[in-house]
Image 1 (tube, rainbow, N blue to C red):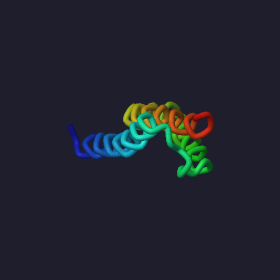
Image 2 (image 1 turned 90 degrees about the vertical axis):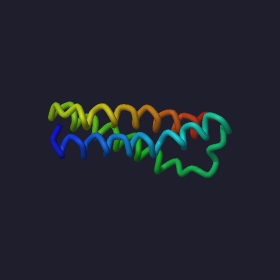
Image 3 (image 1 turned 45 degrees about the vertical axis):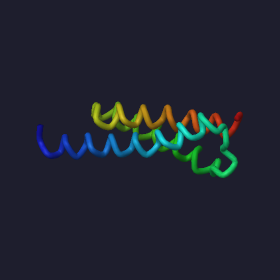
Length: 83
């Protein structure tokens, strides 16, 4: 495994691990009042755009972690909107 792949894997793990605690906390507490709605909308758009970029350039290291982060962000956004 080359250094570029290691950096990509590390970036993916850091990205995913940044969202898991927030999603878990929201799942447990159902509290979202302190979250910024525009920020979460932008997060969902950003992850969707990264996935599109990854698909069009056929780069699985970009696609997979961004799909996971998109799902977590959509959960958080849905809880903010409907929770």
